[in-house]
Image (tube, rainbow, N blue to C red; front, side, top):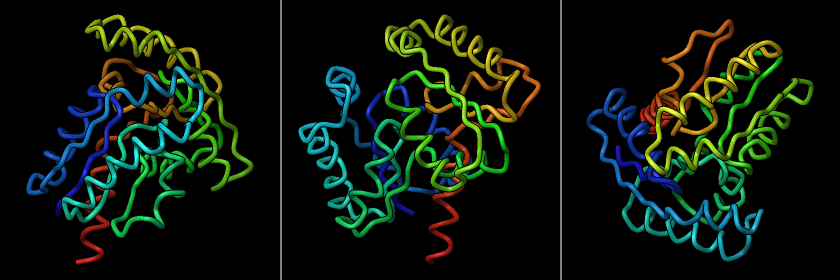
Length: 212
C-alpha cells in the first residue's frame, strides 16, 4: 500500500505517521507538505484560486508518485476533496472522513478546532450526511500559534479548556486537527473523544484491502 499524505502544517506529520506505523507498518508513506497554505488561508479568509492551485500541485506530485490513495491531513482543505476528485485517478480521502462518520452515531456533536476555516468544512460534511444533528463548535486560533512556537503545554491547556466547556452540551467531542489528537489522552471527559489519525489509517487500510 502506497499512500500520499498531503499536509498544510508540519504539526500534522507525526500524529498520522505514528498512526500508520501502528495500523499499517508495511505501508509506503509519502509526505507532501506546503506549510504556507494555512497562513495564506488565514490571510485571505477563503480558498482563493491561488491557494487552490498551490494545493493541487501537491496532489499532482502524489499522482506522479503512483500512489494507491491520497490522504489529506488538514481539515481546512477537506471540502476541496470532492471538487478535485474527478481530476485524479487515485482516491482522495478527507482528513476527517473516518472520524466524522463515527461521530454521526451521536445526536449532538462538539467540534474543537484551532483553525478558523475548519468548522465550516466539518459542519458541511456532517449536515450533508445527517441534516437533523446538532453541532456545536469552539475555535481557538491562539492555540495553533502557540503550538507552532513550540509551546505545547499551553496549547494543550487551551484545548483541554475547550473540551471541558463543550462537553456539557454534546454527546461526543471531535478534535478536528491531527495536531491536537494527543490531548485526548490527557483529560477525562463525560463523553467520548474522537481523533483522526488512527481512524484515518484504518480507513485507508480497509480501502486498500477492498481493492486488492
